[in-house]
Length: 448
Image (cartoon, rainbow, N blue to C red; front, top):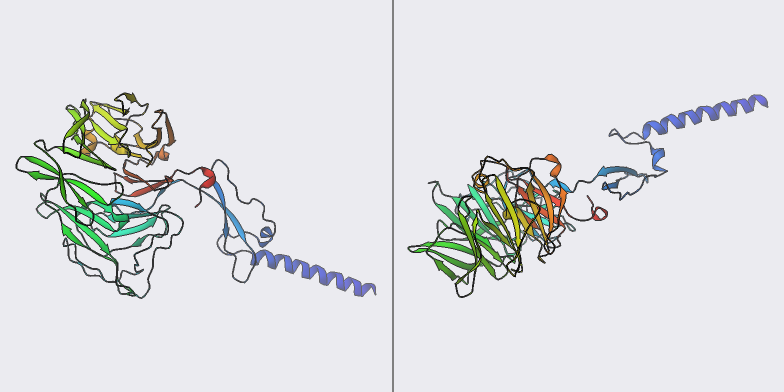
């Protein structure tokens, strides 16, 4: 009897050791997986602490109920594409009106006609899959191809196959369904401006990108600006006596003259129904800014300021402006009564963007300035590049708060835009044209 009991004990010990080592070995998945025993005790769940750490749950191995948890650091700043952009806009979450293909095996195109089509030999369609995050639509430098990517840099998809070579600027209208391309012709002197509309492939068609079809605007347009609602735009047109300001709907209709001027060095800013014309800046020349009335008359807003650059609020009540010159930039906020407040940060207004309610401004602020240079000339001419941080300005009080120093990433920010909810700040790195996103939401609301 005792012998039988000892046999049973030995058998149990052997089975126990065998089970233990087999379970330990089978829990390894070849990718740094953790022991299956750990998944039975899921300590360390979701964590919303001040560092933005969150918990992710990996998909369980097929045929198993086991789940593995890992933690990943959430960085609110992210590069959303490695492609160089010449213009971008933000679409509503889940926008997916254009069907595109996953393969780019072959294509045909006609350069700079605005009517070419790239056909892809593939049976697999790949519509944009994002349904919760806003979508950034942008045009690629040099090709004019249009891409969509969400604000966290995922699901990048090519939307159009129309080639616009040497494209240097793009302005989107009609919720991203129309686009104005600007590029130099082969003579390296003539500026072409093309107003195009994105035409999806025929219903039920697979294997094709959308095309861009439209018409050319006059040559050598020096300045152009899109309205905030993206239904119209304004531009300058050279005349024998100077320039005329022209407005047009993005559908190519409703063209009308807004003003005429014997002075031709203007930059335009269009916010709602307020058109602002500011003299082109130079650090050693006084500049002036005017609002253009419906009668075509210029009404002075501010003037006699060296290196003047401006950025008017969406409601037209406030003016963000800078005075600059030799080793100096000063940033000011002018109120409706004409009083100005000097802000504690120094940057150029074109490195800032207003929220839609005109209560908050987000600015890219250089960490330092080269004191041997004259601004804004040196920055425009590419003689210097800024290392920026992102700051928030309260438009009512003028209080400023630094949101991030960009972790010393050496990014020179330009072309800032906000999504409709004001949750994501999208901008371009002037150094290489790449697009970046900064999550403005509270840490508790941020998700990968």
